[in-house]
Length: 77
Image 1 (cartoon, helix red, strand yellow):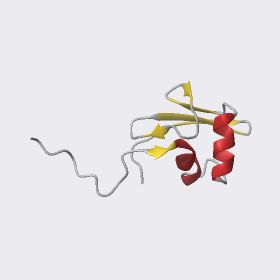
Image 2 (cartoon, rainbow, N blue to C red):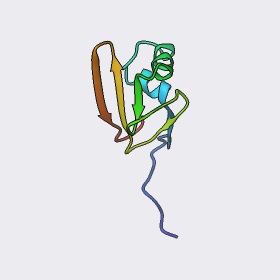
Image 3 (spheres, rainbow, N blue to C red):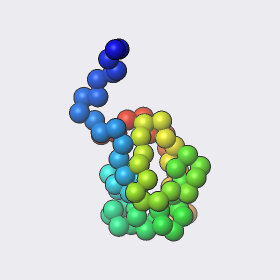
Image 4 (cartoon, rainbow, N blue to C red):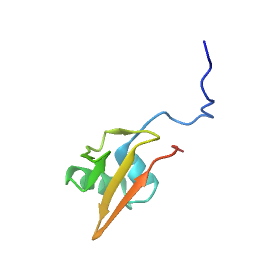
């Protein structure tokens, strides 16, 4: 058995609404949840629900007001 890379206590995946709030795309988790439900957030080019799990390697598109940001997730903190 070959050991994998150390995880240093990082979670393997996080809920999308928590991640959007944690990286401050939205001021509150409720706002992040509402944005997901309204279709303003896509995960890997697909509409995403708030409870969808994100992990390193995923791409998130989020519309905040008139701005649309596209980010790649490299690690979860």
